[in-house]
Length: 340
Image (cartoon, rainbow, N blue to C red; front, side):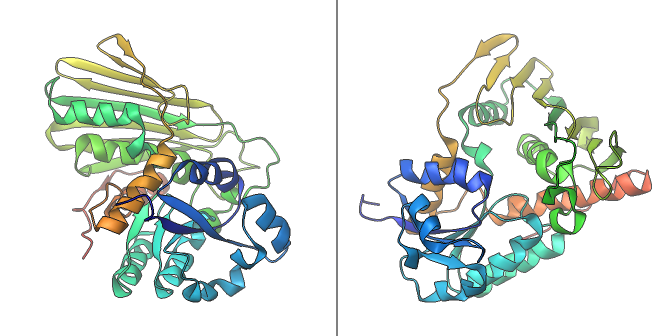
């Protein structure tokens, strides 16, 4: 791939994450360029264009989405909207002949995930899921060391991830129909994906318990959730996600070793300990590295680290956790769903 081959990206959604994380990342990579944005019709196109460094003709409203089909400057659509809308805009982007990068969670149900995969297969476009931590240096080293089997058999994983959502917050993440769930869909999914990378398989069974400290605020979704996942050979993973506590930690126990990661799922401040010895790696912009990776996969037709199977299996686990949360009983897991 030479310096003149780049991927034109259209951002669907201009919320806080897009503005604070993705737009700056796009400015730092020579592999991708911002070619269009899709936003709601309450915004002035010229004002949006000025903010994004585009012309007004490169700003689309959601109701004009299908106009992207005629925009040859766009090869990839990056979906950064509330969870319930992921399937809708993925299917629309695929029908326009555009590759798709979808933020996690991939969708709010396994059925939606399968529909997204089917749509992309039908229109012969690629689908990627935005697991940025696959490109974060501490996590890359951690996974590499585990695969080298340096510390013997994996015994146990424990992790937590959360932040304090302010009282009175009228956030779409509090609405089950839009978000699909609460802290699990937003914060817990990091832990679910980490467990799948570490154990390299799905659990045999899961059990979960919802914790509501502010029931008046969290009427529709879980505020906090703790769960256990049992794997073959009696290996165990324990997780905790929350909208009431600012926590981010990962601990993995082996026969002959202990790995600990502070600020495990945050954008900065990560550090890793291996048997008590501390290591800190340069904090690369892993969002930029993710975009470079996707561009390379498209232009060179390479397999990606963030294929849709990642998103599908995570939602498969999350559905089982929610079932256990609602019934109060352990739920047995099935074999991984296979992308055809």
